[in-house]
Each structure stands twice: as C-alpha cells, then as structure tokens.
Length: 187
Image 1 (cartoon, rainbow, N blue to C red):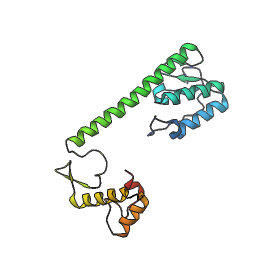
Image 2: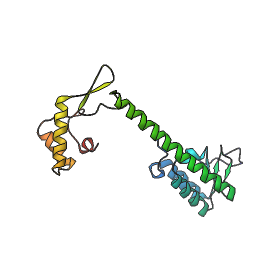
Image 3: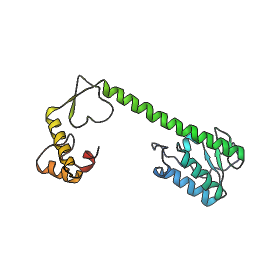
Image 4: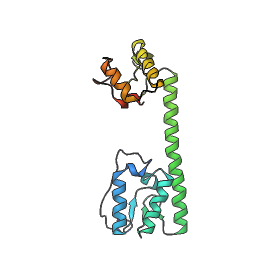
C-alpha cells in the first residue's frame, strides 16, 4: 500500500481458508464490502492469493469496477482499469485456478498411491480397517461385518439418520466417540 501511495486502512486475512470459493472466506467478503463501501483500492499480495477460482476473480473484478473501486496486486503490478490490466488479471486467474486444480490432482494421486500400497493415509483410520506395522491398513473383520450391514440397510432405502439410530440402539460401537452420527455414515 505504501509503495503505491495508499494509506493502509485495514488488513483482512483468511489464514487457513482455501482459496477455492470466495463465499467460504469471511475476511475476503469483509475486504470486498470495505472496498466497495469506501470506493477504495483492494490491495492484495498476488492474484493467486485473492482467489484460485477464475469465476470468483472475474466476479470480484466486476464488483470492484462497478463500484468505482480498484484492485491492486503487489507482485503483478496490476491495474484493472486498463484493457491490458484486465487481460493480465484474467490470465493470472486462469493460472491460479490451474494451480489449485494441479494441487488437488497431485494430492489425490498421492492418496491413491498410498491406498494402492496398503498404507495408511493422513487422518483417522477408516471404519472397517485397522493399522498394523505402523502404517499398513488391513481390514478389520468385525468392523467389515458392520460396514456390510450399513450398506445393506442403505440399499433397502434407509437414510443415514435411521441407520445411525439402528447402530446406536443395537450397541454397535463406532470407531471413535460414543455414538454413531449421520455425518459418520455420509462418508
């Protein structure tokens, strides 16, 4: 802001939030409201940090433009009020979206490889499995019987709430916690 001669009014940071969808980032939404209300520039470190969705980036640019507010990207030296700046902004948006999709693709491929090798991935051990030798997943026969029963009930048309109630009523223990919940079965 100082390099461009602006007075810094506020800092909005969505640390720990994904750049995938702007509606899931409360501080970005606040920053946009601030820029629109005061018709002041929204200064970002980089377009890829603003959003990794081309649709959202185009929406943000139009929202700012129609409300007489500018967008300034420090690393790209970007001015969205010119045709050249609009072009560069859109190209950077495509690149940011591509980067996000590549990260997702590489992560999914890595998880597929881990599963193919029978190793444990990040997070909790899934119901129906247990870990041996530090990180190798193997089927747990008693939990696999429960998994098959859950699948049978779902095929019969039971919803996850009814299945969870059935499991709790019959004293079938979940992997973690004291009771089954619908979100455990929705995975």
